Amino acid sequence: MEIKRRFLIGGLILALISLILAAGCGASKSEPVSQTKSSAAPAPAAPSVEKKPLLAEKMGEWKPDGIIADGEYSKMQSFGEIEVYSRIDGNKARLALKAKTNGYVAIGFDPSDKMKDADIILGFVKDGKAVVFDMYSIGPTGPHPADDQQGGKNDVNVFGGANKEGMTVIEFERMLLTGDPKDKEIKIGDNKIIWSVGDESNPTTKHVKRGGGILKL
Image (cartoon, rainbow, N blue to C red; front, side):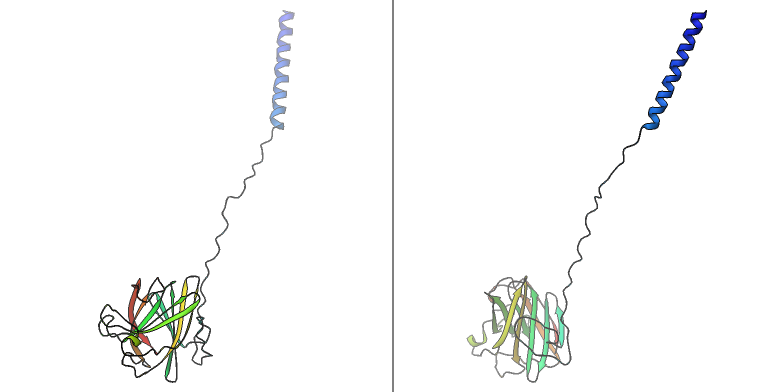
């Protein structure tokens, strides 16, 4: 009986020791610290906004260099894919045509039927130099040979242009009334126009964008 009692006491002591050891191990156990790297992508840069040149009633110097400067023009009108900047100096109209293209930009004055009878001024930049044509459209869809090939004369002799980052600007001047039968009068007021944009530096290639409207000078 004594042996059985001692055996039970020993078993209880061993069980108690096991519980104490188990409690100690549980108390000393620590959870690993989670270190999570931020996966958020950097905020995208704000898109650049093209600064529009300032227009002015009292204008500064006009330079046909392909750069539309602040105060160089008094008006701007947007026609679809093209912007037309304008000023009147005495008996001369000075214009800038601007479009996103590496090809040509063109404006035509006073067409009678689509392109027919339009007095067209077309320009592009090639090898860093502006090239401008004074043309007249024969039919509703052309062709539009140069004035001097149709018994007229070239009346756009002062011009310039630039192409930068896929944007072409052509600046030119022309007398409001030239007296050339292949020119239309450019009026102070409303002018019916057509416009076009081509993707090549060639006046005979077909335009990729075109339209019309009223240009107010």
